Structures are given as C-alpha cells and as structure tokens.
Image (cartoon, rainbow, N blue to C red; front, side, top):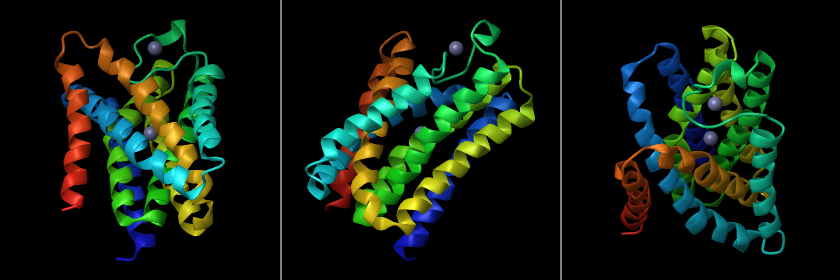
Length: 242
Ligand SMILES: [Zn+2]
Ligand SMILES: [Zn+2]
C-alpha cells in the first residue's frame, strides 16, 4: 500500500475509534471503565512520542520557527478547549447543568474538533517524513481516541442533548481527524508547520488534558500505568530499529 492510502486508512481507524468511544458512552457499556487505562497509557505514550520524535523532527525540518509553532500549538488548544469554553475536562462529564448548557456543549465540541484536526495533522505529518514516524504517531493518537469520543458524547448528554447528538459529535471528531490527515497528505510541504504545531497540541493533550485525569485516580496503580505508556514507546522504538 502506498503511503498516501496507508495514512488515510490509519486516519480512518483513529476516527472510527472516536465513534466507538461515543458508542460506549451512549450504550452505557460496562467496558467503559477500562478507558481509564487508555487515558493513562495514551498520556505516557503521547508525551514520549511528542518529546522524543515530534519536537526533534520539527526542529530539523524547520529550525527557525519550530519552537514558536510548538508554543502556538499548545496555546491554541488551551484557548479553544479551556478559555473560550467555560468548562471542559477529559473523562465522563458528571457536573451536568451547573456548568453545562446545550450551547456550551457545542463550544466544547468545537474546541475538541480543532484538537482532533491536529490529531490527523500529526498522523499525516508523520507519514510525510517516514513510515516509522507515521506509525508511531498513529499509535499515539489512537490510544486516546476511545476516551476522546467517550468524553465528547458525555458532554453532549450532560448538556441536555440526546443520544443522537452525542453519537454525531463523536463522529464529527472522527471526521475532523481524517480531514487533518487528508490536508497534510495532499499538501505535504505544509509538514514543516503541521508537525511542530501538532507536537504542541500533542503535548497539551497528553500533559494537560490526560495526566490530570490519571492523577485523579486514588492509589498509585494508574500513575504506574502512565509509565507503562512511556515504556511501551521505548519498546516500540527498539523493535522498529532492530
Ligand atoms: Zn465537568
Ligand atoms: Zn485527540
């Protein structure tokens, strides 16, 4: 399979995981409890991939502007997910109407859709540079997709929207992910902006969205699972470079 189609198929896989995450919430699936492991493993893996692959690669292809684009990616998500939006956090939305109205649930969706667009940009950028980087960024994105779809669906329900709106919003996150992959695949020269920007987004999602959810869990088990994500990254890197 050529790289264009491979990145698109993996982008579709990541987008589908958003939808399945939404489905788990709407169906009240008991297996949703295990999503916390994805949050913890995903956080460790994403942070490792961002700091050890995306940042150095970004600096190599665009030395002058990469650091600023990184900061821009980080600040952009903070603006769209947490500043323009009055209340957002990963995991099930349990605060209901004290913070969430139907209108704010749509602003959460908009903030998350921008972040998921850059999930896709990350996967696409990876494949522009090398298959290894593409696969690694696919894994990084994939690991937090189920909790992401679950989160947006729960925000919709808590905001008073129905199950269909909840599922459609998870689907929308999937679609914007695929769109991000498409944009970079069709305009590969944009990778020098796309990679450092999406690295900033990935660092934000891992460190600022996911890690607080890991830390909310009592005991050290979930904290250790985070390190499991870091170890998983090193394992994958060792296997790929044998
Ligand atoms: Zn809440
Ligand atoms: Zn994401």
